[in-house]
Image (tube, rainbow, N blue to C red):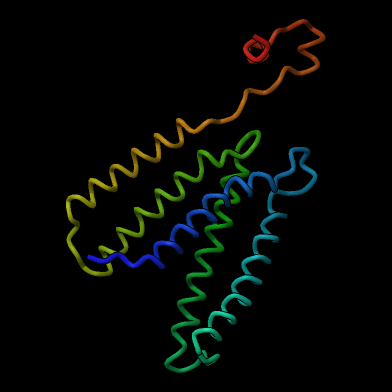
Length: 183
């Protein structure tokens, strides 16, 4: 069986972009709370809008497509809008997940859940829409994804503990984290 490479290359491109999405989003948060966590979401929306419209128009032109969206062509706009709505709601939900932590966002916890959950849901929806019975190996795969989510989220490095505060330093309180770094 010959595997088509172009879809796989694009899939890896998506994985790279979306894998960097969470950590990049974590940097958009103000530690001093100078802005709400949803201010960066406006930038996300602008990026989606610009890239989707300009990229879509360029790709349609390259493919020789028409700019007709009525009649038989209406499903493209209807289902495209539905997919865009789900994408935007997913980005809003991801933004909400990232800001719900006390302290800095933890992309290393959120992203495995997002992607493992997305893969599992895609498999289940595919099974339902094709009216197929689940292959037992798919069920094993879903279980392995769940285990993988837990293992990846738990064992991903979570950064260093907070450094000793000035109030602790003045009081002469030693921080175990600093003792480890100094030794």
